[in-house]
Every structure is written in C-alpha cells, then in structure tokens.
Image 1: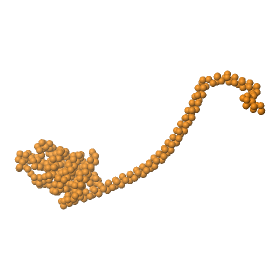
Image 2: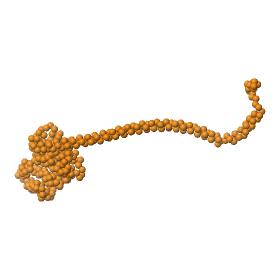
Image 3: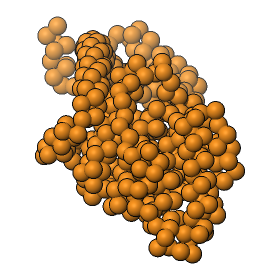
Amino acid sequence: MRSAQMSRKEGYVKVRKRDLERLTTEIMQLREFLPKVLNRELVELFHKARGAETMKARSEQAQEQLRQECQHLRSRLDAAQSEAQTEREEKLVLREQLWESREQLQQQAEFCTGLGAASCTLLWSVSRKEEAVKDILSDSKVEAFLAMAGQTLESFVKSLGEEVKMDQQDLCSHDNQFVLALAGVITNIAAVTYGRDFLATSARVLLDTLTQLLGVMKPGACSKLKVLMLMALYNVSISVKGLQYISETPGLLPLICCLLQDGDSEVCLHALRLLQSLLLEEGGLAPELREHLPLARIHQLSSSRHSALRQAAQDTLEDLKELAPAQQAPESGQRSLQEHASHRGGGPWHSKTT
C-alpha cells in the first residue's frame, strides 16, 4: 500500500495485467465501433434533440406565461362579470324607476291637461261678456297667453294624423277640449271692438298662425276647430285694421276657396262670411282675383239644405253682382264695414262652449 502511494506520487499506477488487457480490448472495440455509431445523422439528431429540448424549455416558459396571463384575464373576467351583474341589477332598478316616473309624468300631464281644459273652458264661457274681455286685455299677461295659445294650436294640429277627425266623441278628450277652448277665447276676444283692434295690431303672429293652420288641416277634419278659427278671422275682419291686414295675407283667397269645398256645412258657412268681408271691403277684390272665385261651388251652396249656408251663398252671389257696377261708380258702390255687418245681420260672432 505504501509503495502504491509512492508510485502515484511519481506518476505511475500499478494495474493488473488482466485488467490492462481488458481495457485494451475495450479501447480497440470502441475505436472500431465508435465511428460507426457516431455518424453524421446521429450528430444531427443530437443537435436536433438539444434544439427540441431548448424549444421545449421555451414553450414551457411561454406556456407558463400564457397560463399566468390566462389566470389574470380570468380574474378580470370574473370582476367584469360581477360588475356587469351589478350594473344589470342597477339598470333593472332604474328601469322600474323610469316606468314609475313615466306613469307619474303621464298622470301629471293628464291632470295638467284636464286642468287646462277646465280653466280654458271657464275662460271661454266668461269671455262672452264684454267686461271680461276688457279685463283680459288689460292684464299684462295677455300677449303671453295669446302666444301660448297659438303655439298650442299649432302643436295640436301638427300632431294630428292623416285620417284623424275630431267628432262629437272626441270632444270629451281633454286635449281637444283644451284647443277648442283656446280657439273659443280668441274668437270671443275678436268679437269685441277693442279686442279685434288689439289682435289686428298686437297679435298678428296669432292671426298668421290661424290662417296657416286652416290650410294644414285636412278636409273633413277638426270641423269645430276650423269653425272657431274662421269665426275669429271674420270677427277681426270687421275692424278696418283687421280687414286690411287679413286681406294682405298671401294665399288667403285660395284658402277660402279650398275651405268652401269642405264637407261640413258650418265650415263652408263661415268661409263664405269671411269671403263676404273681403268682397265688401272698399274697392272689393281685384278683378283678377274675383275671376278665380269658385262660382260653381257658391251656386251649389245657394241650394243647400242648411238654411244659414244657403242664405250666405245667395248673399255672396248678390254681392258679386253688385261689385260690377260698383267698379264703375266707386263713390256710390262703397260701403263701410259697419253697414256690411248690419246689412247681413251678422255682426261679430261669439262662440259658445261645447
């Protein structure tokens, strides 16, 4: 043992001859077979295996990263779903509140409409008295009231459908009664001298609105409302200023001709009365305008079963006959509006509540 240690120190190792021979044999075998085993394909496979191991490691690393990201996204999804559920519940609560608010708003609107209809109906009834009209016109809010009345009438007419008709059954609705009452108040204001003067000077926008709406409403629709508007315009036409302003309204004569074709007798009657005011204005209508009058329709109405309409049509035909010689002798043919009113026995028209 001591000699072996000393040999190691000197760089020699003692090996048995049999072990040396075995080692030599193995080395020779390796020298013979190793080139056969370690060929180029094996080396390439080895490199590919190492590359695959590298890719596997990278894939595992990427997979782990994706797993972490997926877990993060899943956490965010859970939070978003929880938030969406909370918002869905809040939305349901808000929707219920919205429905409740709509119902309350509808109830308030119905109440306000009913209150407005009742108030305006009372005002309509009171406005038949001249003293009441004086009080109305002396109030500082009268211009705001008339402006609101015009806007309300315009909104109502524009909201009507193509086939809507306001018949006796419809008169019970608050909306219809409201607009009828507004038109009735305007008519009664125009039935008083200072009332029509006020409308002709300070409420011309309202007069323009009435004329415009008469042209918008379909034949046979809203007959009661048309009658009240025509009554209001006729009452204003009794005033010199009113007649002068109304007669200058563009498209008024075609509008009257169109209204004369309406199937309602009352509409035709009051359209004829307004036409009479235009005909009996000093100088009458221009000849070129009178040529466009629907004489055939007026002749047809002069045979109507409606007594007032028949009489109005006959009076209109007489007025047209009298206008021809009046053009040649204007001094003898001119008549004042007051004479016109007394001649026909009409005067201003007061409307009654329905």
